Amino acid sequence: MEVAIGSDHAGVQLKRELTTCLTMDGHTVLDCGTYSEDSVDYPDIADKVAGEVLSKRILGILICGTGVGISIAANKIKGIRAALCHEAYTARMAREHNDANIVVLGARVIGTGLAEEIVRTFMQTEFSAGRHQRRVEKIAALENKMERRF
Ligand code: RB5
Image (cartoon, rainbow, N blue to C red; front, side):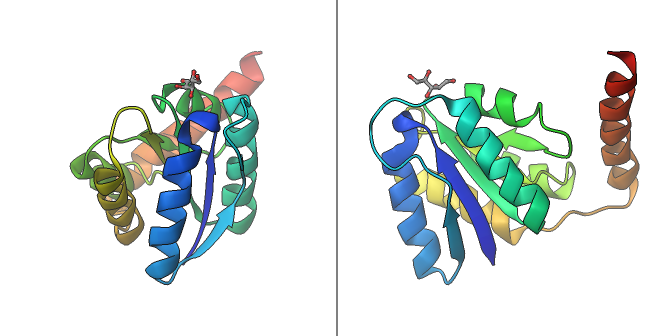
């Protein structure tokens, strides 16, 4: 599976570790940066990963210190459903019920082992559709409604 990954400076070490883990699992990892501990702005990284997710129709992974800033930024982008997950149950539900296309992690909140479990769960789980399809369509309708309003 192809997956896009990106982090700000706070998440760069966890990004490296997850990239190694995913590559060993046989995935193709598209690294959207950042590539060093030098300070960067997380919205720029959210923008890059979201672009890959939308244009290639793949899943994405975003990391910042808490996961909060980068998930807020990603969820401003039309078509992105980014889920901040700090345990595997939420990651599974985010795919099954919400058709989330990006999983977000806080590198200063959880350790590498848990982050790997969350990412694996997210990537292995399919959207259930059914009654959840209508709700996801209503999220898209909200995006369009907001566009018309402002
Ligand atoms: C960077 O210091 C930090 O603010 C950022 O990684 C993130 O936690 C923001 O939500």
